[in-house]
Length: 132
Image 1 (cartoon, rainbow, N blue to C red):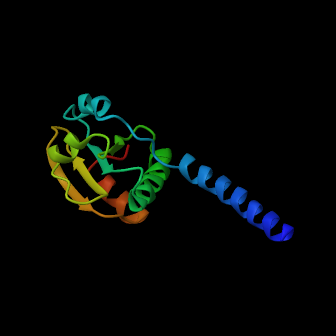
Image 2 (cartoon, rainbow, N blue to C red):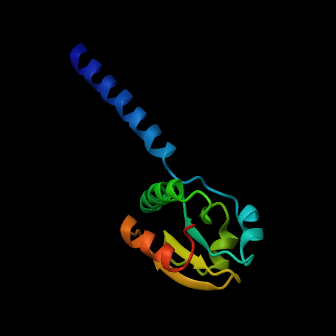
């Protein structure tokens, strides 16, 4: 009985450490009010529209974190639309995650629903000039 308790406790602690590490490598949520002034200012941006409580959104946030780490000056932002529902309405989000690329004038030029592989996402961001 004691052995099972020790094993269960060790598994619990091990899982907690992995959980924390996974969240540390996610692209941080940015309030839309901080992103809005950057839209339409000559540089394209990617808005990752999702939620921190959505598994696919978390996966995308990890992928985008890695891309942003390689291209720190790129306009890549994660907006939590469960906290900021008006943004979901503004960008006509029907499912999470949704990625929206806005060109330098602020017009939507690309939309993707669901997760995306790193290679495909990097190629798309390069094609639309988001990566710098």
